[in-house]
Picture 1 (cartoon, rainbow, N blue to C red):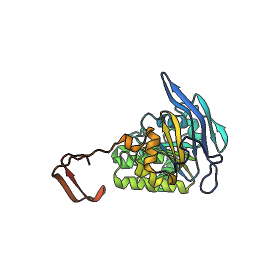
Picture 2 (tube, rainbow, N blue to C red):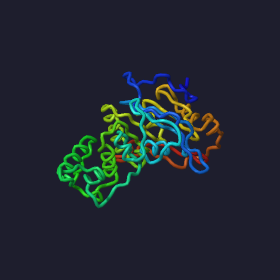
Picture 3 (cartoon, rainbow, N blue to C red):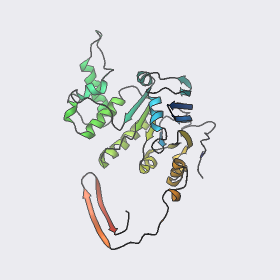
Picture 4 (cartoon, rainbow, N blue to C red):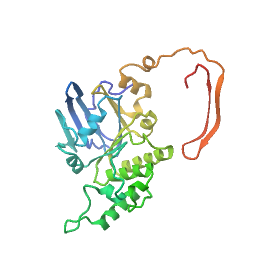
Length: 300
């Protein structure tokens, strides 16, 4: 049975260890000229847990992230951290409150060092108000070690590959004392090996007690790492609950407002001869022992 399919929250939601939500959004609305992006949505994030935010493009996911990170201001509603009302007039205010975001594409600076990219805008200072480069390098190395990144903080960013640049972006996001970590499509441009490393990072953050909001279109990711789910559709919160209590088909129905068989109706294809066969296909980092066949008239 699907829990909370109409967006009815538990009276006293708690994490597995009995803790209440570290972040609570209630009645959040946001409009733009001609568009109501969010309409009285709610959201709770719990310490040491991953909440998957699910929805089609245009459902309001990006808008809620921008509200949480101080880019947008809500027209209505309330935000509370550990039960205390807060507001984020700027991105700096969100950071000071312990909210950080890891985006699919974070702006970095190729001609700066790794350490400078991590601490740009909030570098440690000496007592004379100058940047303390020695302390910045020490803290950058500690952050890189924490996420398992084997990167020299002195290296210029342009000398790194895409995967390592992504790790620098993660270290930058964690360079504030974050209680709440938003991960917005963090695996979209990563290889299989790098995705596995991202999952390991999520587990480490959970073990540290971070409350994680994980946004992804990949259901395999959601069911692998999420503890809870919240579904947005057309700017409204339409469902929430424990991930163990919902199926992929039920999530799709919540996302699109109709059952899976209506979205992808069954048809009776006329299949022809085999036109492609793959057996034992491997790649050192991407996949292993892949095999399939494809026949004329078939969509695989």
